[in-house]
Image 1 (cartoon, rainbow, N blue to C red):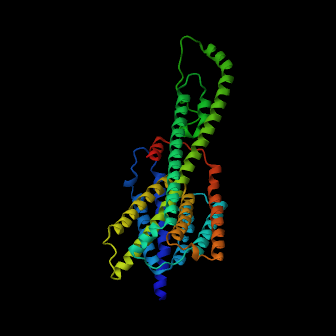
Image 2 (cartoon, rainbow, N blue to C red; image 1 turned 180 degrees about the horizontal axis):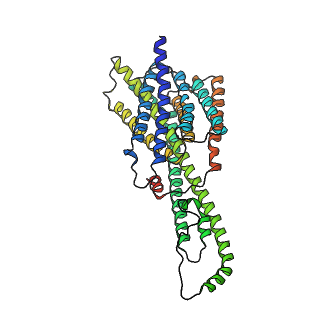
Image 3 (cartoon, helix red, strand yellow; image 1 turned 120 degrees about the vertical axis):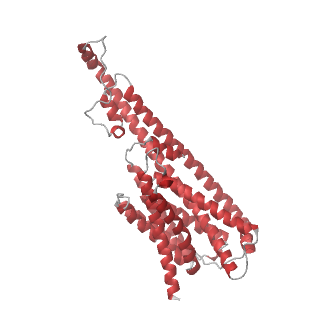
Length: 397
């Protein structure tokens, strides 16, 4: 019995570590491949990360859930949050501030409280029993509200993604217009977006001097004396406008990645719910009661595949836009909370919760919210980085 429990714990912890390592390797591939001609799916590191992510999201949870109760397996998955912070520090060389450490700790403790006091073990159910649960009015109402929330968040993510691409294109086009405009001093071009021209030396002119036969050098000197203050004021205004545009661009990028991570977690919770139902059907089938003769059982399998692919799509988008220090806790937080409420409503278990469990779940949700807030504080100090055309193409896809 002890060896069986040890196997379940090992599977749960291994799955969490592999899940975090896979996402970290994919993020590193996204960071390396920023050129327009790069193909992400051909990169060996990205392929390895994706393979680790898929294997860790399927095999270890199946083994863990078949051996351990949910209220034991779920808190063990929080080990991945700590591993994610370590991988981000030593593989991605991310800065790990005190707020990151505190936020990760709060999310870990909060998710542990939610999983420990909110999970109720459920025996395997047959297909007719699962269908009865699907048809309950309470679950139908809950699922429609849940689906509406996911659709709204996806629409918001698309809006912020397009806004980011538009701001990036506008920012780059304004710099190009400044560089080719006549009578604009070089310092105004460089000052507006230093990082765009970081490959050029500040002492080297970006544009060659143009000799005009209509004016002598003295006329040019006199003209520059009177025009320089005007152009200097224009340069200052252009620089401030570009600064605001860049801030807006980076904020749009962050919000789009934030929403992608949340949507990924919400879809992942439905994947877990379908996986739990599928595992129950598989257990009954292995016991001699065949459950996969009905087409509805195959519909559960198809739904599992569709939600898994959608989760993979949005997690890739989130990794492309944000750090794993933000993406992984957000995914885990939204997935844990939505899986909890979905499971309670779907299996009709709300009435089984005691007042102590409800209070501890509320405490866990509060800790999760505080942790996510601390991890989201990076948005207040976003660096002014330029966006290449290749990055814009990747985001818009």
